[in-house]
Length: 405
Ligand code: PLP
Image (cartoon, rainbow, N blue to C red):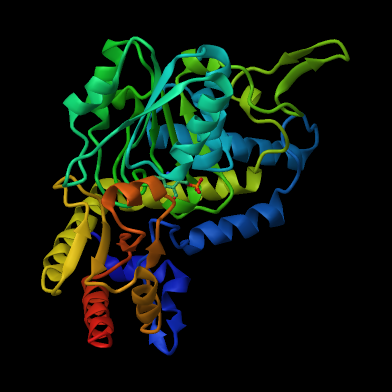
């Protein structure tokens, strides 16, 4: 059971008032707020152990190196990866996908090959593959979803061919909220020896993830969406794949030896971490993951399911409401439009009532085209949200609607 009041006290920003009203923060799919233990860790790390890591012989450098590598181990346990060196720190989900698209593309893709993604991908899991396709003369195949916003296994399987080199897919859609059947999809792809990258940006804050049970080849996420700092994220890759991919960037850290004639690359994970790593951010991310672990993702998921069920019930009381994404396997995201009200107007009127939601295409323009809209309003929940906040959202929407009639 979640002690919601105790949790809210851990997040100082939730006490903010906006235009004189208590903040209702429902933009968690864009970024989450930070508990005090995360911001305190950032201050503590800079105040007590700041020194560039790896190779330093002095005390502070060794402290910082140990903290950074401990953070890697925390991520390993969080994802249940087999080896610590399968965890690569990146700037976020976007950089992690770019890394794989570049390095995998260099090693394994030839003209005429195919890459399979779905119609509900964030630009981050679309544009890097498009760039690879243009560079190498590949075809990008898009798997459509049905009216509920679900991917059907048969449709997915039909998109695979002898030429498919990799599948890249969101675990949870940032617009529709759909939780995709990634384990089954990975199984189908593996039967044809096709590796799968899972974009877990919207999954890890809400669902326990075990990369070995999923048998994912690559799994990526961003720290800032799971209560950690901005600017750092994670690429998990199976050792066998990572060992066979060339580096993404060159520079310090990623080398074993360098001469003017030739460079020998470092071993995993350092081969993929050129330059000074974010050793402060990694320890703050570890603090966030430990915090989430202390509450328990199972309990978080159960509470967020209650929030979503209540919100869905309440949304049904709004006349002329259109919901986008109605799967039973859904995370705490509600994308909607009311009548002809422009999403931007709805977002602005809600903001004036202290309610933060996101409006627009949510970095998924092709998905908006498939839905036949320019944009939506999106409310997205975290475990610090309450039923009362949902009541305020619904009342806020009804008030906004009343201003248009
Ligand atoms: N993938 C999904 C499903 C997302 O929701 C997001 C962010 O909204 C991203 C990728 C990109 O994450 P970042 O901007 O942290 O790299």
